[in-house]
Length: 188
Image: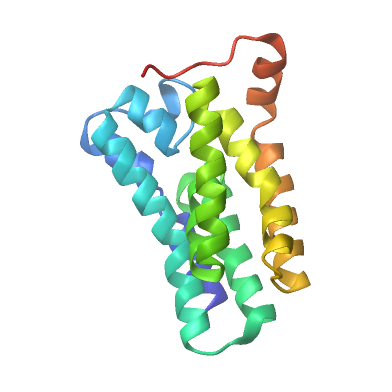
């Protein structure tokens, strides 16, 4: 299951959709293979499909792990394997995305109600600031607090903290642009 989760996580949804449109998203826009860059350089529809595909890469192995009753410890490892696959995909020489959509899929499988709250945080920050990276960082940062508030097991809280830190690390260039005041904003 760990290998399956990693390999599924490694499927480069945004890169594949960009390639189908004749665009190497790694060499366009921000150079990221995630939904935001795909939406900017290929189109909103492909961006939404990338979001759904990257979310499914986290949801499917975690959902299967839960259905097979692997327990929270093993399911957390499956989640980390899928997440690591997205960040470091074997199919793109270990240069992947930032993990936000894959984390969304993972958390939808593990804690759906708490994840809805995190989506509300994301949309609120995105609408107020029109900055997707800031909304992503806010939702990721709030995850451990929201899971604690909903009385989820400590292991899930630690998993969300680890993933939030990993997401922040992957957003370090965005953080620099946010500090400098030059981070891209989306149009309403």
